[in-house]
Image (cartoon, rainbow, N blue to C red; front, side):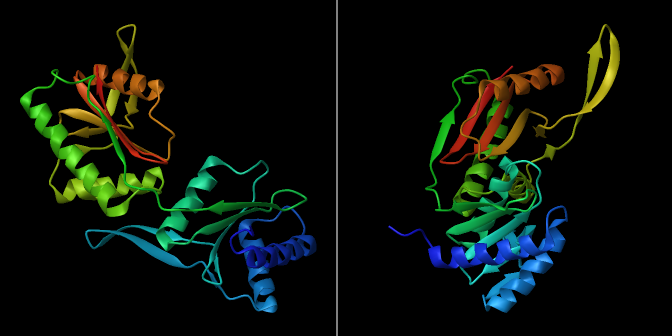
Length: 264
C-alpha cells in the first residue's frame, strides 16, 4: 500500500536535498527557508510560506500558530537546524500544526547534519475519551473545595469538548486559562513559594502549578502517555508548602484526557 502523498513528499524531499547540497551545512533555519522557497517555485510546487492561523476559544484568539510551509494544501513542512535528532518538542509542534490545519501528514526536516534528516508525521484526530480518578481525595474535601473542583472540572471538560486532543501543553494552558476567565473562576499563576532550609529562607520560588480559587492546585500537561507518580509527588510537595489539602493534575494526553485528584 503506497504511503500517503508519496509522490508529493518524494518531490519535496528531492527539492530540499538539492538546496542542502548547494548551500551546505551550518546555516540557520531562515537561510534554508529562503532556499526552499526558490527551489519549490522552480519546481512548480504549490506552497504557502509561513501561513498563520489563530486558535480561537469562544470566538477570541488565544494563540497564533505559524507554519514553515504548507505544500500543495496537503503536507505541512517544519524546518529545524539541530545538532542532535528530533526532539519531543518538535513532534508536539508539528502535531499541533496538523491538528489546527486539519491535515493528515507533516514532514520534519533537520538541516543540522551533513545529510538531511526527514521524518514523516501522520495525524488522525483522536476520540474525546476521559479517564478520571478522585479516589485519593474522595471524602477529604471541604464543601468549598468540592465546589472549586467541580467548577474547574467543568471548565476543563468544556475545553476538551470544544478543541479535542492533539495540541501541546502551552496551547491547552492558554485555552484553560481563557475558559477560567470566562467562567470567572479565580486562579493565580507563578505564585511565589518560600523555600526554607534550617529555619532560613533560601529561595523565593515561582510555582509552576496554578492556584485555583485559593482552594487547590492545578497542573496542566499535554501529550503525555499517562500521569506518572513523580507528577503526583511534585504536586504534593507544593500542597504541603501552601498548606492545601488537594490538587488536580490534568493531562490532555495522546489518547485520552486524564484527570487525577492529588491529596497532600
